[in-house]
Length: 167
Image (cartoon, rainbow, N blue to C red; front, side, top):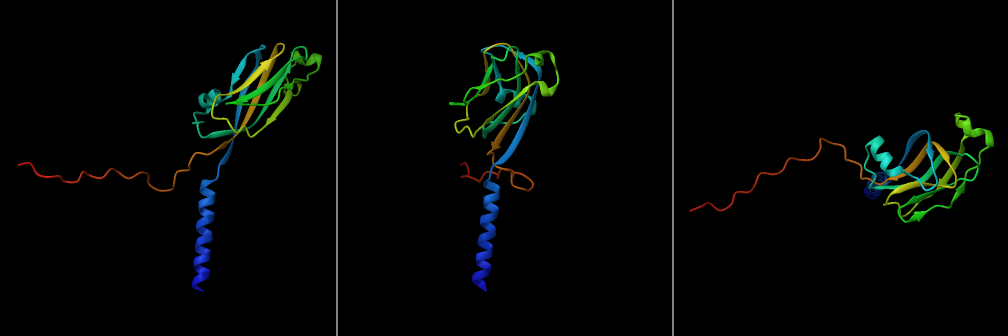
C-alpha cells in the first residue's frame, strides 16, 4: 500500500512539473487597415506586437503567420523572416477589380506555417513586386516564459548578519 501511495505521489509530481514547464500558445492580431506596401518594404511584426500589446517577446518562438494582402496587378509576393529562418516566397492572388474594394474577402489570405526554430531575432513580413495593401496579420507564437508560482510574491531581503564589533 505504501508503494502505491509513493507511485501516485511521484506521478502527480511529474504531472505538475510537466504542466508548469510547457509552453503557452498565444495569438496576436495586427490590424494594418489596408495600409499600402511597396516592393522592398517590411512590416516589423515583433516590434508591432511589443508596441501594441506591451509583451516581452524574448522568450517567444514564431509558429505561424497569416496575412491578408492584395496586389494591384497580381505580381506581388510575400515572405516571412524570423531571425535566420526564412519562409518560402508566396504569391499574392487577387482579381483585378479587388484593388478598389475595401472588403475583407477582396484580400488574399496567405498562411506561413512554422515553427521557425531560429526566431530570436526580428520577425518581419517582407513585400516584393508591385504595390500591395495589407489588411490584417495574425501571428501565432509559443511563449516559453516561466509562469509565476502562485503566492504572495518574492520574499523581502534578509537583514544583514552582525559582524565583528569595532574596538
